[in-house]
Every structure is written in structure tokens, then in C-alpha cells.
Length: 140
Length: 140
Length: 140
Length: 140
Image 1 (cartoon, one colour):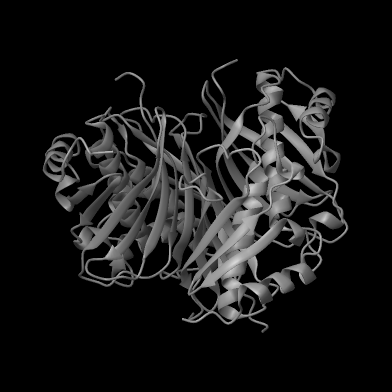
Image 2: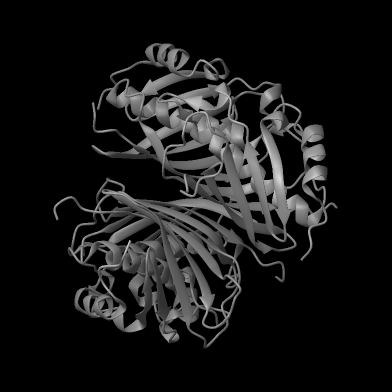
């Protein structure tokens, strides 16, 4: 399947619908059933110990799944997460961006299921792994 | 088991270690193996459709678990989430705070496991339900 | 909401549709949005160390959710689990039945979400906690 | 990292420690941080609609993770699952074996985290995806 939105259109859409947070994230790559999203790590994302907080990593995973879903189905802003699980495995390095690589395993009419691997930018080790289910609203 | 930190000490600790986000949250009640935390909903927590975003609810669940854990074991700032799952079931009402009620099911030496129910302030319906595991660092 | 099937009808239905496994389980109690199911622990459920295996506890959680769902909506045999998460917290005692107490948090038209607490029969300590989402087929 | 147990030794070990269920499963391949396990589908694994039951797929995911973990650390029979989440995405085909491909993302001293993709034997489509955490007992 070919994506119907590219990274630039996704970034424009995010800036419009999530003005509060879009500046922290950037869709970097879109491919069939895949998207990479960057978290531009700033002070607001840190927690004791100098690493990126769990909720910031969750937000990255959630946005990466939203990006790949919209890349495949178009600008359905009201798609919502119904379930998510996340394993935090390693501490992020301080002062380095995070990349969330989302991959859809299933794209149904009602539900989309995928997972997201989070790494430090340019590194291999998986810091966190998340699986997410989105519900796609019927009223399109 | 009696808590070793009360709501006021937890709020002071949060303000010190999470200065970026503590203003959005308030520990309201601590009891044996339980804590209630309020998310003071503001514009930064909203998403398309006018409801509170998933990552904001995740942050509330995570902070509520952190609060109940520290209430029981004391100010171990470096306790970290290792795993979380969350089900989003109903849309929060716009313009109303959220309450996360965390309850510990197990408080071991190394791992603590609990769950969090999120409701609108003053309402009954469960908006989201999360289970979380925290790792307690040995170097205390 | 009043259940539309009681424990006896659920046990008959299970015996009919799951003849391979129904003998290991017994629905014991049904109430509004709740059901208790017993796992009659036998050798087939054990693992090294003499405790009940994780998959046996998962099967109990899954059946308990199925029981409460059918109790509320009637004999929709084709309802299926779409997502489950389970935390294993304490070892079950050898030679003692397990009870799974399922509670529905949300009963929508398409999805039902609930959780299950597993204890040893007659004991308080939670051995495992599971959350589950079932999809309800439209073709009813 | 090189595995310290191969498929044959894992199958012998399973037959010894899980005599009740080992006949249903077969470790087929072991590689660095990976293992493939086959579920030999029989009547006991089916559910209404003729597909493999959720608990049978959970058992396959759990055994595949156990296999890859023991492949890497040796015959530590008492390693236990502490947390699992599973998404069921597509119906298995009736009368066809399932393959669970487990991959470790993290192998720590105390916790191992990985995921498992389940497909029909010889097919590509992911039927279920699970993430699992195992606790490794210290008393080795």
C-alpha cells in the first residue's frame, strides 16, 4: 500500500491540530505502513536522573502511530488510541533526540494495530517498545 | 501498611524534582496502598475534538503510580516505570479536571505493580484504566 | 444493567462450545457487569516449581471476561479477544483452585473492556491482574 | 551473543519439565536473541468458529519467549513471566500449524524483554503480536 500523505503534509497537519505540542515532534520519514518521528528533546521532557520521562516517550510512540495511520488513511484527525502498552527497557541518553519508528501490523476498517520502537537518534539499542491500537471513526 | 509520606510532602517533592510538570498535577489523597492525583486540565492537555489527549492521561496514570509508590516507600526519586498498559474507554469532558486513583497490588523489593482508574472529577464513569510496573532501584 | 444469562446457562453454553476445556472451568457467580469463574486446578495446569502456569491463568482470565460479556449480552459465541495484558504478581499455591473475578468497565456496541483479578480460592492476595478487550461481532 | 542451548536441547528440556504440554510445541530454530516455536494445532486448541483459541496463542507466545530466553542463558527452568500483552489481529486458518517467532530486545540480569510475532506456518500475515517480560531468578 502506498501512503496517501507524506512527511511534509503530516507535519503541517500536526502543527494545525496539535499546536501545543507539534513543535516538539517532527515526522521524518513515511513509507508503506511505516513512519519515523523525532522527539526534539528539551528540558520539558526530562525527569530525575537526566533522562527523558516515560510520558514523553509514550507521547512519541502515540504520535508516531498517529502519523503512520494518517499517512495510510489520510487526515482523519479524530482517530483515537484505544489501547497501548509500553515497555521501558533502557535509559535514554541525555541531550539526544529520540526516534520512534512506527509500523502498522493491521489496518482494518475500524481498528489499526501497530508497534513503535524508540531509539536514540543514530543508535541501535531499543530504549522502549510500544504496541498501540487506534480506532478509526466511521463518520468519514 | 501505613504510608510514610503524606499528600503535602509528595507535592513538595514533585515540585522539586519535576519542576516542568508539577504545576499541572496535585496529589489529593494518600491512604494505605492508594493515592488520588488530580490533573489540572489546561490547553496543553487537549487534542482534536476538545478532549484530554492520551499522553496527558498516561502522564496522570504514571504520576499517580509514582505518588502511591513513594507514599509507601519514601522519596526514592529514581524509581522508574518498566511497563505500562492503558485502555482508553470514554472521552473526557472538556474543561473538567481528571482524577487518577492509583492502587498498589504488589509492593515487592524490586518491583511494584498497581493500577490506576481515571475519571472526570466528581464523576463515576471510568475514562481510562492503566496497569503499571515500577522498578525500585537497589541503591537506596 | 441486569445480566441476561445466569451461571447455569453460561456453564451449559461453555460445555457445548468449548467441550475440550469447559470441564476445567466453572462459572460460579454472575452479577451486573461481574462474573466469578473457577479454574479447577489439575496436573495439566502446573509448571516447574509446582505452581499454576501463566497460560493457565491467562485462559482463566480470558474465560472470565467471556463469561461476564455473554452474561450481559447473551450467547454471542463469536465474540473474540482483541487485546489482553496480564501481570503475574505472586505464585499460586499448589493444589488449590483459582478464582478469576471479571468486571466490565465498558460495554459498547463494538468493544467491551474489563479487568480480571485472579486469587487462590478463599484467599485475598491478587496473584495476577489482567485487562482485556473483546470485539463484539456485528452480525448478531 | 551466541545461544548456549540449541533447538534439540530445548525440546528435551521442555519434554522433561512440561510433560503435559510439550508434545504440542516444537522449538524449530534458535539464533542470537531469536527462536521460532511451532504449535502443532490439534482439536484442543480450537474455539467456536474453527480457529485457534486466544489462550492457545498466548501459550505459544509464552513458550517461544521461554525458549529464546533459555537458549541465551541456559536451562533456568524457574524463569517466570511477569508481564505480557497480546494483540489478536487476524483469525488463524483452521488446520494449519502456528509459528511463534520470539525476539529478545533486552536481556538484563533480572529482567528479559522481548516480543513474539505469530503467523500461520508458511504465511506472512501476523495473526497476533505479544510482548513479554520474564524475571530471571537470582538463585542460579
